[in-house]
Image (cartoon, rainbow, N blue to C red; front, side, top):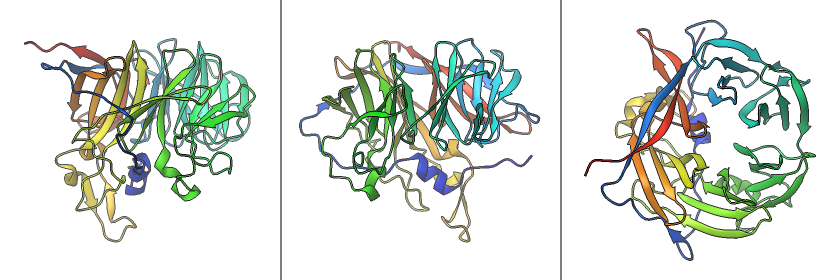
Length: 366
């Protein structure tokens, strides 16, 4: 089977374009106190086979741990979900291509409500609730296209960070969706009207339910800027991390310009805010395959060569980083509470595998 690899447009799509904003009226997140504890990544599981139904197709595959300890991996095509055991053995597929119950067009990510799996289909604008064996419980048609990040709230409603061009939603990055699939409210902008429909890419967010009831966190993708909002749409505060290694940029990769930084993962857990940032690898140009005949001048041959990852844990009370690490591979998403993952290559004849890690704060010796 031919292995696919991401092209430059897919990388540009991964990194949102930059927006504006000053530090005025915002709270600065302070650097970690020295010696700063490090964040250790402990390997948890490796998923994928060299061939057969358990194959990992490309860097586009996304994994999540399921409540029963099994693992779900979204296929690159987005029309099925591969399930692996807790020891990494391929078990079964859920779903197939189509538009009927239990069928998908493009599952972008997975949510969980107890032992129920919720598949977010961004092409059908639909949530499919199913048991772990694939039995469909119900489907929920949405009146808004779910965004790159969608979270399930404790009361069953969803929060989606979506780019929407409707006149009453343009300029608002966050949307609260009710149990009937209708938008309850759109919010998340301090300056609505500053972004036209053609500039919606400027407002993309990563979101996480807050541990404070009735509140959520939203972090800008092209800036290290974290906002807290109530579900009523009231802005609570903005936290800004002003560091040299995360300059706001335009999400562009070219032959003579290093790729810009971007927030790619976000999670609120155990009183801390965990942030995954993609930052340019020192040798990023070695991961490019130059081909002037291609629309964007070439391909990315190795995402792990393009980006490093900075993972930080932030205390939102003291406004200080409590642990930090810069990691060589590109870790692009959370895979569960305290878990992150990415596609890498393994074996004597390298094949793509999905590797998950547990995040651990490790105190440094004085």
